[in-house]
Length: 194
Length: 194
DNA sequence: GTGTACATGTAATCCGTTACATGATTCC
DNA sequence: GGAATCATGTAACGGATTACATGTACAC
Image (cartoon, rainbow over all chains, first blue to last red; front, side):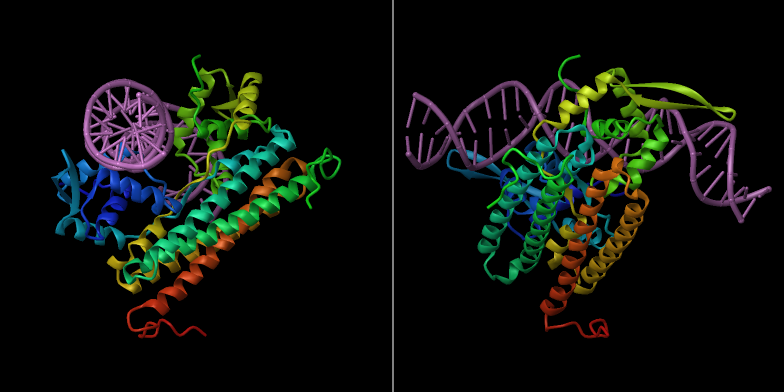
């Protein structure tokens, strides 16, 4: 039993199970991938299975096989012990957010890139922000106004704000890159915007 | 030689060495810890040493021991090959940012917490944001206006925007939590602000 | 009949952390 | 004299990924 051998990712999965539905590993991953992933990097499929095994070994979840047509699908549920463990974990001091922003690393090392290369990378990031915003809006739509999803709406709203800010910063970055390039704004037809 | 066995963290260190100074592992970690860490989680000390060994084995860095008083300190420098490898990596498609936001995971699972506990966690996060903003301002101050740090200033500026947005969102979260609590705004003397 | 989503896993490997160990230097 | 910082590492472990392997169900 010793200590608390459950990782944050384990608790995240346990958290998804805390909505009291029985879910397969695949479904858990799906859910993590399209709603959690905005603020918490979704684990690989294989890790979900590994994590579920550990959770079950620790008695925090249980599982059973249910027939799904011809096949057997294993569905998981949280146990009373799991609910207690999760509650205790949630009350512990929170670590600061962990970020690995690969684009900004490139910007930081911009002296090793052509301004055009850097600009393209930032613009790609901008497109990614737009795509994330679109799926967040779709998510908010799906959540409706059921009280069960009140907190889910809060984090989705946070996501919208976060990605909007990211988008503003990226736009500002493009402008700064244009202004700061050797010899002022870029020539060659990339700067003229409407 | 096979493929590209260097991790993003390895490239990050290589990037720090691309400013053409010879640095010890300790100094690299220091630098990563107080300027890179705003957008790229700083690795543990022990990983820095491990990464430096790999880089040297791959011929991307070189090192030598220099006397520092009585002791020998090992300093590292980037090689021509390292500069080429870094340049090539920087031009590759950029992965989206990776985030693990432990606070938001708590918010998402807010149905398992007392509103007061959740509120306290968000307020703790708010204090963390303030502290980060303060050190970012100090950093921007240190950077001065030397052209060498032009890109460093850009990412520091991004950091200020990012943490300001984070702060706004956290404040909004506190308000939403107050409003949304069962029975309206919290009683018991925590809601009345100024 | 082909591709995509559903569904579950194993193997190998690596990324990264914590804990431990050691010692010099500098500040109070 | 003691604490904090500088400085470098090793050992053990666990977290997480990629690549591989397998097969079903369903839509076009």
